[in-house]
Structures are given as C-alpha cells and as structure tokens.
Length: 278
Image 1 (spheres, rainbow, N blue to C red):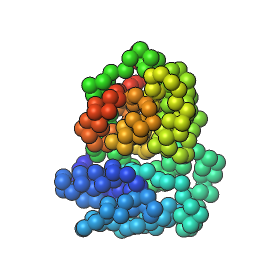
Image 2: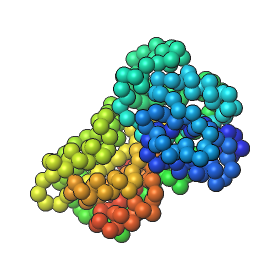
Image 3: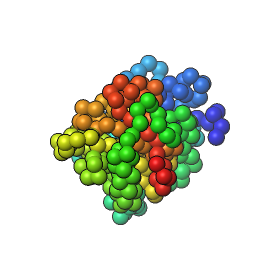
C-alpha cells in the first residue's frame, strides 16, 4: 500500500477514528473523514480536519463526496449504535443498495461485506485499520504481569469454543465464562453491556473471563474485535478476572494504558489463537 494514496475514513464512535486521523496528520497522509451522525465524536473533526457529517442512510452522499475528494483507499472504523428510523431513511443510492443485497441484510457481516463490494465498485480500495496502523493488533501471549490459572485457562478454552460457534452464525464476537458456565454471549448490545449483564449472574468463587474472537467468516478489514481501557474497567467492576482476545485478529486501543490498568486491577490480559494449546 502506498502512503501517498488519499485515505477516506468512515468514522463511527470511540477513540480509534481520532487515532487514525492523528496518524495521518503525523505522517503527512492526505485524508478525508465521513463522520457518521450520532456515532462519531464531535471533537473528531475539530480544527482543520477535512470532513462531512452524514447519516447512516446516506451512502450515496458519502460515495459522491469521496469521489469529489479523489479518495483512493477507505477505512471503516469505530462503533455504530443501533440506528433510529430517521438515521435509516435512505437516499436513492442507499435504497438501491439494500434492494440489491436483499437477504444479505439479515446479518451484520452480510451488510458490511456488501458495503465493501459497493465501495470497491466505485474504484476505491477498502483497507483494514491494521494495514494503516499495524501496532493496534493484539499480540499473542500474556500482555501484563498477571497470568490465568488452570480454571481460567479452561474458561478461555470454553469461551473460544462458544465464540467460534456464535461467530459462524453471525451473532457476536464475545462471551463471558465462569467456572465452565457461560454467563452470557454478545448480541446487538455490545461488549460493555454484555459485561455489565454478566455481572448480575456472577457465581461465588473465582471470577469469569471475557473472550473476544473474530468471526470465522469475518473480513479482516471490518469490525475486528476490540478492547480498550474501558473494557478493563468494566471487567473489574463486574467481577471478571481476565480478558482473552484473538491474537493478530483483534485490536487493542491504547495498549500501554490497557496493560497498566489490568496490572493495577489484578486482571490478566492474553492474546489467544483458536486451536492452539494454551
């Protein structure tokens, strides 16, 4: 990938879009941001950041602006909340898009893969955030000073088994397991809500673990499993004792701070690979 190629950033919520903007500014890469209303943070486009705000339903408007800006590469990054009715009112291009993909709209992955194809049909190349900022990928092995014990390792294995099954069904990426019991699986509510919900079902004894894996069929360029400082804080608040994420297939936001928090709170952090003996 040539850095001189202009980058289009389709930005949802969270801190990674800001990190990507700052990365482009630091490295002198030309870029343009399409900020999704109700999702992207207002501060993302403070100052002289070139941007346009669009609703989720305005894909056609976004494609047109990217073309006007001579965007060559596109990264889709950030969280997207469940949209309201107004957000989904489509422009003509988006109406045609949903009519074309039909049944694929039944799952998040189907929509995202179809959107990637639509963007690339416009002559742009969709890139994964890891192709631009490779240091965001979580490394394999223990990342802090705390290690999982025998029970925690068993819970991680169980969590990976369940997460892979869920992923094949395009349900979610995360699961919480305590002492072999699945306390909860991720749905549309997201990981933070999953952790809070599982806190209500916590059993006595050693706390559970959070496991996050990329879905088997998931395109590496879109919606990779992600953790950050808030994930560690939520895990501690809800009685978990560790977090395991798909090594080389998941993102860690502000790695140094995540490790510092985990060490402070007594949680283990681990990059894992399904199928490996841990």
